[in-house]
Length: 275
Image 1 (spheres, rainbow, N blue to C red):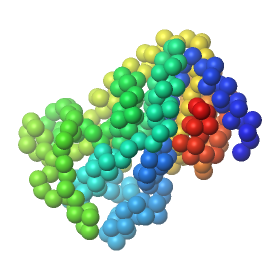
Image 2 (image 1 turned 180 degrees about the horizontal axis):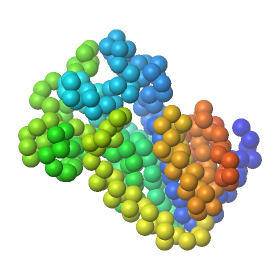
Image 3 (image 1 turned 90 degrees about the vertical axis):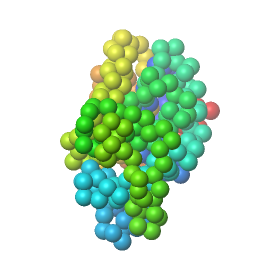
């Protein structure tokens, strides 16, 4: 890695009046969370699914709630418990303090559904969860467009079969099956209202910035699901802002964008940029 790129990134961070933090699954690896990189990575994190013959895409599908609700909630119930029990790594705190110090504010755009930016004290008004949140539910039957907080809802999962034990989370309005308010693969029934409101707030802030200096800090966003990378690159071009891309495996800087590539994990990169 070119140390000059680290110095350049530090200069951009110091000079920036505003910052946009974008994050994919790699952001949580230093907290101990799996990143589900390919089926091998998924099966390493969840060995029962290899025995059952299910891939990550097959488990992260609304079809599991249709054909086997206990299996669908087994996967998401386990993740809900894992994310609640996991403490976000120190990099979240460092980023929050840095972001709060920018005179023109900050925004967060993440594909992670774990709620760890909220847990780390980032202002909810500045966060966009582009794929939804596991901390929020919706009705599987879509009896309404309601989205509600999971609160203290608990899903008991058999670790051998990865099936949830009844009672499964239910819709408070119709009493039918609930599901996480997460955009799944092949999902035409995700209720996007909450995320759309988050995106509208972010767009309003960005449009008011004008030509002020901004830096974009991207952490752990891979190419397999490129939502975050695409957002970062588009924003960098629109605002002529530098992009600091942090990823230990896929840190390539896109053409036509001013920026640097840091092949590091999120925590190490944040410590080198902020300390």
